[in-house]
Image 1 (cartoon, helix red, strand yellow):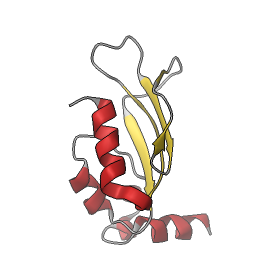
Image 2 (cartoon, one colour; image 1 turned 45 degrees about the vertical axis):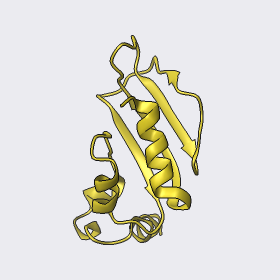
Image 3 (cartoon, one colour; image 1 turned 120 degrees about the horizontal axis):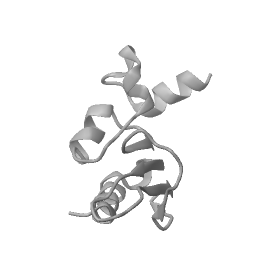
Image 4 (cartoon, one colour; image 1 turned 90 degrees about the horizontal axis):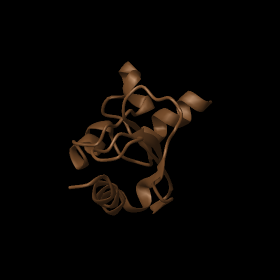
Amino acid sequence: MGIRARLDNLAGLCGEQLLRVKGVVAVRGERLPLLVQCVGTLFAPLLPFAGTANGSFLVVIVRGMRLDELRELQPSLPLAVHAATRPNAIGRPLSAVLEESCA
């Protein structure tokens, strides 16, 4: 399954809970990694990314989902969720953790 199909699946599974996705993903057969951007479930076209990136990653911001739920939905995506670095974030809705970290 290609990156576009995986992102479509993520959008379909998260629905209105998906707020934002941004990242850089290396794709087999592409010379440069692809820049991934979305607001809600609307994805911008995947464009070659000529900047520097340390491997593939996606930052996914969702409302009312736990980190483990998001990883279960798309285990093969290279997710780098900010809340995962906070020890008290496990088992809590990501939106609450992100709101707390922005306060």
